[in-house]
Structures are given as C-alpha cells and as structure tokens.
Amino acid sequence: MARFRFRLQKVLKVREIQEEQSKFKWAHEERLAHEERAKLARLKEHERQIKEYGYEQGEILLRQAMYNYLASLNRKVQEQELRVVEQEEAASLAKARWLEARKERKKVSILRERQYAAYVKEELSREQKALDDMRSRVLT
View 1 (tube, one colour):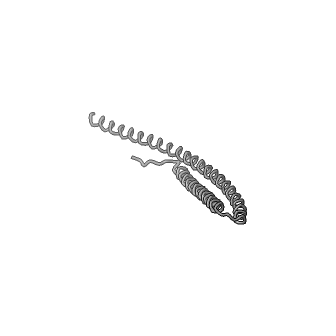
View 2 (cartoon, rainbow, N blue to C red):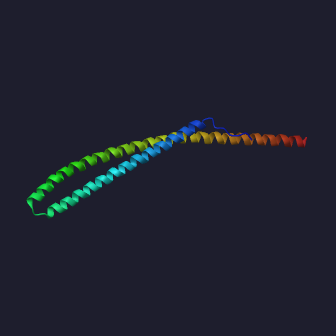
View 3 (cartoon, rainbow, N blue to C red):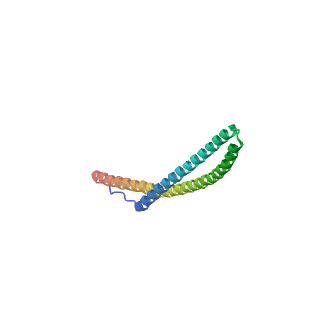
C-alpha cells in the first residue's frame, strides 16, 4: 500500500497557522475589551461612592468641590464608555476574522478528508483486484 500524500498539505498548514494567529488576536482583543469594561465599572463605582460621601456632607464648600469633581469624573466615564465601545468593536472584528480563517481551514481539511477517503477506496480496490487475480490463478 502506497503512502497517502495530500498535495495541498502546505496550504493546509498555512491555513491552520492563520487560524491559530487570528484566534489569539481575537482572545487578545477580547481580554482588552474586558479590561476596558472593568475600568468603566471601577469609575462608576468610584462615582457612586463620591456621590454617597458628598451628599452626607453639610458644608457648602465640600459639596461644591464634589460637584466639580463629579463633573470631571463624568467626563472620564463618558470617555471610558467610548473606549469600551471601540474595544468591543475591535474584538467583534477580530472574532469575525477568526471565524473566516477557521472556515478557510475547514475547507482545505474537508478536501483532505475526501482525498484520503478516495485514496483508501482506491487502495482497497487494488487489493481486492490482486486477491481476485490470485484466486483465479489458483483455481485454474
């Protein structure tokens, strides 16, 4: 039985590498998006704590300082919300690229499986033909 050789093995290897790289890129972008969401959550929690502390204070100067600080903090929260949206879009794009790379690798893998099945069928056919020839020689 001859050894099976897939002519597009190098193409398959390249597709596997591309898929792996795009998967790592997606994981990286997703991790960054998670970090941005965590930063936003921390900012919002800090804002809540400042409001809670400030509203307990009776002094006008302290409340005025709190309002100024809250205005600044509110700008930071809005900026962070924009960063979260941008990073989530980047993660979504990276995921789409990974899924596309996976689809391309799958196409070549299916082609390899089909060629291997045809190869096995051919080899079995040759083997059966050789056995039939041997049997016909023995019977004659």
